[in-house]
Amino acid sequence: MTKSKIISCRAVAVLVMVAGAVRGETLRELAEKRGVLLGSAHSGRSADAKYLDVMAREFNLVEPENATKFGPIHPSQDTFRFETADAVVAYGAAHGMKVRGHTMVWHQQNPKWVTEGGFTPSQLSEILHQHILTVAGRYRGKIFAWDVVNEAFLDDGSLRETVWRNKPGIGLEGTAYMEQAFRWAREADPKALLFYNDYSAEGMNKKSDAVYAMAKDFKARGVPIDGIGLQAHLMLRSAGNLASIESNIKRITELGLQVHITELDVRIPVDAAGKASAADIEAQGRLYKGVAAICLKYPLCTAIQTWGFTDKYSWIPRTYPGFGAALLMDGDFQPKPAYVGLRDALILAPK
Ligand code: G3I
Image 1 (tube, rainbow, N blue to C red):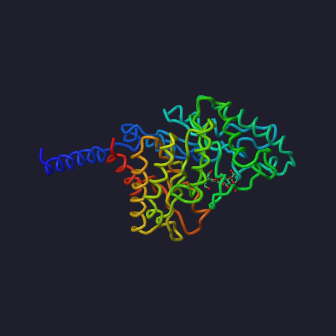
Image 2 (image 1 turned 60 degrees about the horizontal axis):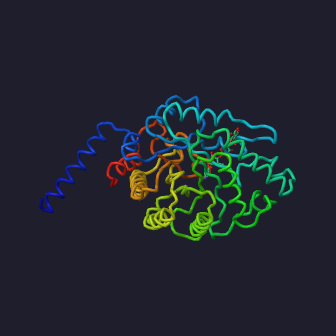
Image 3 (image 1 turned 135 degrees about the vertical axis):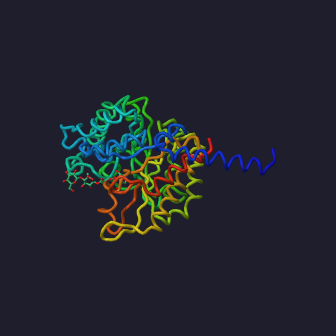
């Protein structure tokens, strides 16, 4: 066959695939054909039937946005509140979705009884150990992957000061406190995949270098770590960083570790009514497509998850006033160019 015939056959094949999707294949169907996990954070709003229907239609992976964090799930020393987490896990099971857990060791959303309890390092160590055994133990076999440690590095690559590390910490220096948490998580659920998760560490920079060095060291010494979560809370200017994101995914997967894109969203400027410009919404679609396409090039980049899917529910407007419209669908669950971009990446990705 001549080169031009091969090119036109490819073009026809792409058109046929796109036409198939236009006929109504959901993101979930396309992800399942492609053998990748496509997820969304679940806000815990179990009363919004439309929200729940659309999420199960479009995704095969779900993660509680807040419900499995230390504060919400362990609000006082002798009390665990599993209701919301149980509901999300049951929702995932009922719809054949995998469930990610988030997170054991973090500097935020810790309850006052932990941060202001005046505990000694050995007491805190016991508290964290029992917490991990209880929570990961409860969801053994139900939560397939855990962000064990979240956001432990600062942008300059140094270790963040936290209650678990050094304020007062669990009594272990450097990354040893994280290593301990990974070992406890493996003890609690030997089959769950264990991840380190962070933001602003998608591309090559001082923070991602520090994460990489930690992961390489853990891997070399048999510390139970299975992957790195790249949060990917992006802005339009992140588009200039796609090659750098690819280099980072490449080096992590070359260690034999998985990558999950864990919290993808792209915040854009909005007016007082929450409306963004058409040009920004289009550019956002291209960025979703670009990030997804990079992940799909690497067999060990096994999940792409967005931090919510409808602009009806997103953490962005209250955290970044003047920004919003960060997700795949608008507040009425209508697909945006971001949805189309993600869909096109799934359709066009090399197998
Ligand atoms: O549930 C309480 C409610 O009872 C109370 O009345 C209300 C008053 O403020 O607060 C509610 O809790 C809020 C919670 O979200 C649930 O909506 C907290 O104030 C609020 O701080 C919390 O924000 C979450 C944030 O983490 C906490 O830092 C966001 O929803 C969540 O999207 C965000 O997620 C993080 C990831 O875990 C880690 N990566 C960054 C990402 C974005 O910050």
